[in-house]
Length: 99
Image 1 (tube, one colour):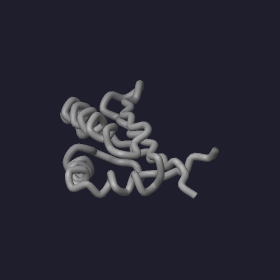
Image 2: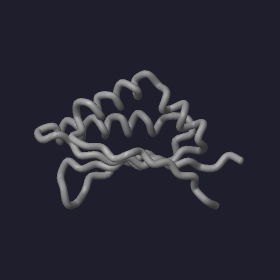
Image 3: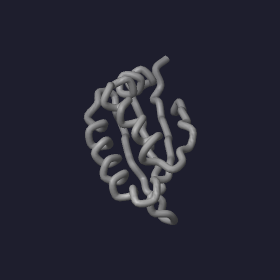
Image 4: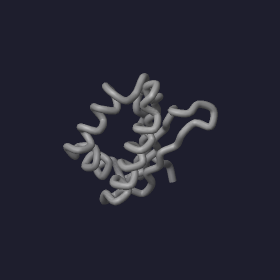
């Protein structure tokens, strides 16, 4: 059974990188929202801490997310996010949507 698939990722930008990360995440969101199978792709910023971000995505199914996730430009983006832009990053969490 194909069920909708949600992904959540959170992280804190390195000091001085907040505006750059905000802009980069927003551009990635706009690009990814056009991918086949994307239902929701939102970027959130904490109301308590500037530079603390959360990405929330919902995909038609896990296969749609996998296709999106394997794109070379996304792999490069994720590597930069983890190694250059984020001070810390939470583990990614994956969810099947019930109903």
